[in-house]
Length: 160
Image 1 (tube, rainbow, N blue to C red):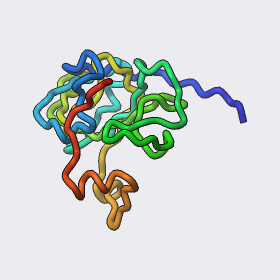
Image 2: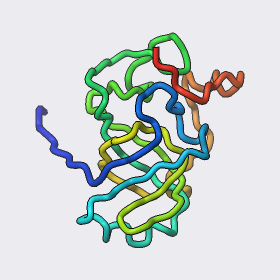
Image 3: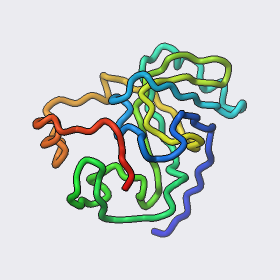
């Protein structure tokens, strides 16, 4: 199945992070940083009723990643894991996602906090975060649980 799939950006994500070094490993670790989405004007009507949600799921393209790795080292540790067990940008399709906190909408601009993406990231889609659907109980977090159990989670990425 070698079918080509074409995606097009619906906007651009702007953040204070100009390079990967120093970006939080997840936006919830840096709650006061503000980002902005400039949605293309033709998609503005798609924002109808989005203001009633506190959080959004952003799907985006890791445009700064130029490589693909099936095994890699996550930022939390030095051991290697399969790409589908980590959230590295060096994925087969370079697709990322983040859950962000919606601050406000002004025209075709969306302002949000809990930022963890690089400035100029192409936005592919926006979905509302719905706790009734998206939250789960009795979740296993694989190798990552060790870091939360032992409180070893670093807040920011250090590129080596």
